[in-house]
Length: 178
Image (cartoon, rainbow, N blue to C red):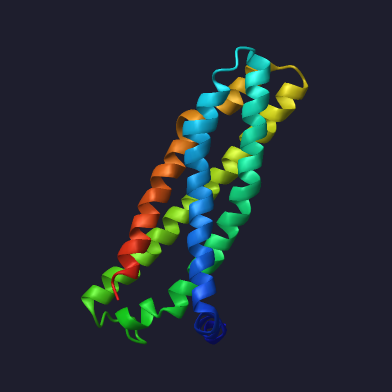
């Protein structure tokens, strides 16, 4: 399997890196747009039910973009981590550290992957909450819809934005390491 990943990365390096970057741009950029443009726009709607319907609809559209982007991001991250040989540069076959700098880069790769995984889990939770809000709106339960939507805007999207920006920065650090 490792040989396949290394060869795939070698054969499609530019495409894999492009897909990785564009996925991060779509996901993180979409969240920034949602939080600071769409959310502000929706908050200007006076009718609470219509405001929540528009917010739930916009979130659904964002998640239709973010979920595939997150999937591509994780797949390309694995291809790059293996294909670029971070482990081989850091440790020998017995797991002994052979280069401290390479080891710090290898650890950065794992931290970056962990951040994206936390973001995926948070995305899944947001998708669930949005789905529950849509059901509550369909049943005219505005209190439940608000209960489901409010944490998305107040906490969950901002956390993913912050984590995404950190992960992107770490990607730049890794890219400039060579």
